[in-house]
Length: 127
Image (cartoon, rainbow, N blue to C red; front, side, top):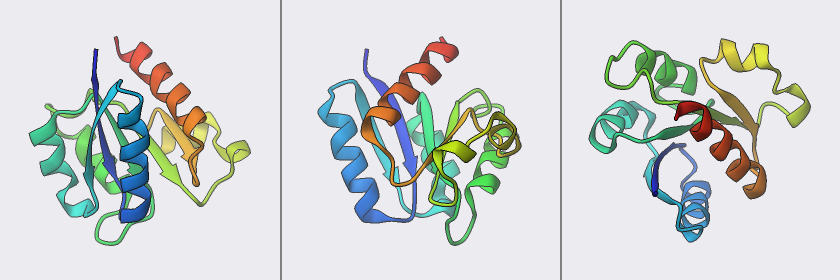
């Protein structure tokens, strides 16, 4: 089964590479949104299984996007995985994750193997 991933991050080079690597596994269909103010519309149109969301972005930060998703009945059940360069792997505690309204927080640069394992865990919890 192909899972749908929405990536919301303002770094276009990063999102192109992430999309390419995820789709190369043939397990994911990926949509990218580089403008955080359009993230909710993209989520409504695409209806992803998981959202990968950068925390620090111009316009709306990832916390704002996650909060709006939680307030939206159509989107509130979609798991959110935050990505940020602001923390190391050791700092991604469950308290920080919960405060951000996400299931997980991944440090950037994102390690593909860690990301794939995280996606598998998130999708397993969802199903």
